[in-house]
Structure formats: C-alpha cells, structure tokens
Image (cartoon, rainbow over all chains, first blue to last red; front, top):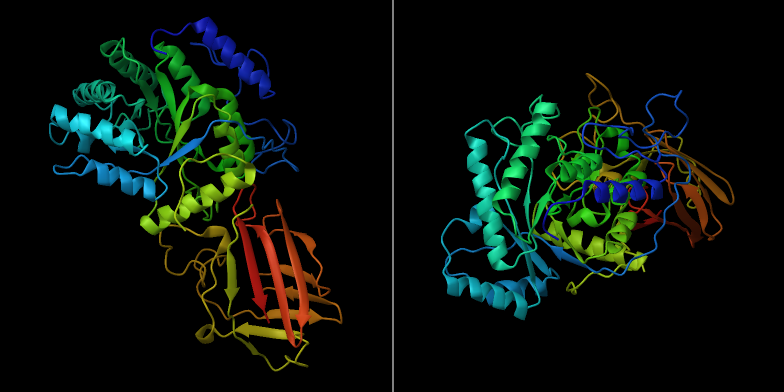
Length: 354
Length: 147
C-alpha cells in the first residue's frame, strides 16, 4: 500500500476508469497537461448554454457490491477517565460500528501505554472500528503556520500508526490562516504547488508507514473536484494519498441537479482511491448559489446510487455521518441510510434500535 | 423494502362565498385556516438548520422587496370521478377518484409519484407515495390526506 506510485500505473488506471465512464480516451490529467474538460458531459450539445439540468431518464445502475458499510459519527473521546468499554458498547447499541477522533481532542493529553492498549482491546471486544484521526489545521497556511500544521499532521500520522488506525484525514487547506476561508489564489498554480509540497513533506516524514493519508475535498480549497484528487496523488507520488470522499463538499450549482451523474463520475474516477466517506445531503433552495444542509436521503444527493457505488469499492468502507444538529438528527440520518441501503441491497453493519 | 414516512396533515380550510356546494363536492375557492391547521412541512427542503423566519411563509417567491401579500386561495374543480386542485403557488394537481394508483410527475418533474384517491363515505382520502424531495435516490415519502 505504501510507497511511491508509478505514474504509468496510475495513468493507466485512471484511463481505464475514464473509459468506463464513457469519457474521451487519454483524458486524465497528467502533471503539466490537462487534456480533458473537468466537467460533466454536455446534455444538449456544445452549442447550448449552462447544462445544469439533468438529461431525461438518467440511467442508474443500482447493482450492489459486496463490501459492507460501517456507519460512524464522532462520539469518540479520549478525555481522562473515559470508560472505553462503555463508550464502544453504547456506540454499537446505537447502530454505529466505527469511529474516529479529532486530532485536537486526541492530543489534548498524553495517553499512557496501558490506556492505548485498553482502547484497542475494547474496540475489538465491541467490534468497533476505530479507524482514524480527523486532523485540525491548515497545511498551506502562511508560513510559519504551515510548518506547524504539517508537524501536527505528521504527529497524527505516527499516532494513527501506533493505534493501528487505517487513516488520518486532513485537508490541503487555504492560503489564509483559517482553512475554511477561501483565498482567491487557492486554485492558482501557487496554491496547488503549496498543497503538493506540504503533502510531499508529510509523506517523506512518514515514509514506510502503512496508514492512509486521506484528503477531504472541499469547495473552498484547491482539492475540490475528483480530477484534482487523482492528480494530487500523482503529483505527490505516494500511493498513501487517498480520498476522504465528501461528495457534498464538491457540489456547485452546475451539478446540484445532476447528482446521479456526478456521483457516478466521482466513483469512476476515484474507485479504490477512496479511503472512506462522509455522508451528507443538501438542497439548493435560495436565489444565490449557497446550498443548504438537508437530512440524509431527503435532498439532492442520489443516496441509492451513492450507497450502491460505495458497496462496490473493493475494501470495506466506513461512512461518517456529520454536520447534523443533534442526536435525534443523527438517529434519523441513520434510519434513512439504512432504509435506502436495504432497498438497494447494500449491507450496513450493526443494527439500529427501533 | 423502503422507508415509509407517513404524514397525516390536519388542515382546516375556510370556504369563501363561492365554496362548498355539497358535502362530497369540494369545488370552489378555499383558504387555509392557520389557527386550526398543523404546520405544513416543506417536504422538499427538510433542513436540519433552522430556516430564516419568513421563508416558507410570505417571503418565498415574492422577489426583492416582497412581503406578505394577500392570501391566495386554493381552487378546486370537481366532477363525478375527478378533481383538479390549483394550489396557491400555482401548482395544479389532478386526481382520479377511482381508488386506483395513478402515476404523475413529482413537482421536480424528475421522478414519479403514485397517487390513489377515493371517497370513503363522505370523506375523500388521497394517498401519495413519492421520493421525498422528488429527486433520484431519496427515501420514500407517504402522505395521506383526509378531506
């Protein structure tokens, strides 16, 4: 899993995915070359205007795969005195079978070796997959902040390795200090180069590790589309660079009503580069381009296609339900996801209480 | 198996002078009596964040500078075996009152809803099954209206 990635191998893999998606051959971005339009295919020909409406009768292949999905939502804590057995037991009782922890919480205090062993043992005993550390920070912030946050990511990586977690999750960030504030140059060559160099530094400092470095795409950052995720992995040149896929984070008005096609395109391009998934939903119900959160399964996301495609990934996938308002919302989200999964024949681990 | 969500809306309506010809004929113009009615959920936009005050009420669709205008009535035309309802927003829904399922496009025009309508005694019962927001891949929504 770890180690340098062959550009030829990556390009061939991406090409095959592109052909499967029905796009033009030779179309995937090589370093320094962009030979494919990074957009959904035209619906009514190139002479028409914005093609934001879906074509009639979009074909949906809802054939499920064999990979089960584990649902997660951030309930993990490492506060002093935590009864991990009880914590994991309560997660499972609620139907949540995987968890991750925020890096700020994780590094808030130094855990003893016996406490780390206890976490691993209780997670295993309760069949909870403690799969990752969700990292704070901004690795391309103005210097010297960038260096500080890259160090933070490296520390999180090493800790994840020690705990046997599958992944760390980070963003490429913003050229402003706050990664959630889009800087006008985030999508410039400078923004891209800073992103690639930051990850090269992290990869070099953690070489030999097996933990994935999952990058979450976000509209406000350079990594805001599936093509960028493919190219980032190639430009960093390390197969540990994966996608912490959040499709909703990449939605803009042009695809807001073409989510079946967009979801398929994302999975065709990324396939097994996907380390894990964020589950959200959205609606566009205002005059401006701002999108609003929606309960999972009730908005524009095509959850049937979404879950089906996840189940076809070759490795089991954890799915984080996030950004809801309260516990009742999380329960409702889980009910909806399980209902859609059952309808299309996708396996979701665990059982949600009635 | 699909997720079933049932909504039974209690809506009280006040007949305008032209309304109410007979107990089982709803032809006429009607306005909603908010004081006696349950809140109507925005099925397409069930946000997890609180909505701005006014959206879904008088602001939506009124454009810049708009405010709460006079309440627009719902208009119903009913025959022996059909009913056409023109909603205050202008949407027109047609029902065949034969108790059989009929397909119609959802409000998004992208998906299909299945509607069953029939009289049960003096009461008109309309059942609608559709994807929640009328988009592909939504959970299923069941709405039962009792008139």
